[in-house]
Length: 72
Image 1 (spheres, helix red, strand yellow):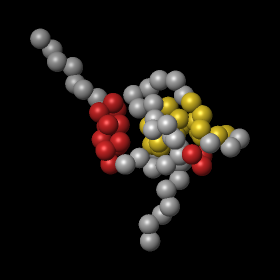
Image 2 (image 1 turned 90 degrees about the vertical axis):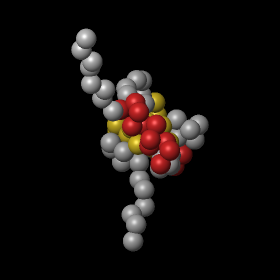
Image 3 (image 1 turned 120 degrees about the vertical axis):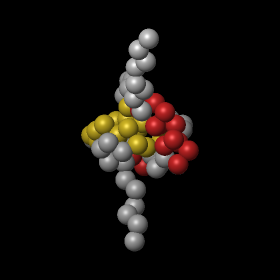
């Protein structure tokens, strides 16, 4: 049986507006998210979050995959 998805720390989640973020903390009925690749946190009620789709996770990988430096 598949486990029900929960917005737990270090997982990615999508808020009601469609923004994707990594769960960095939960406190007092709020979930704190940070955009892929870094940026300013925002808070969301946990009931308004959902699991990212495969396409959304592909976009996350674009922002979080390191690119090696090219030396000339």
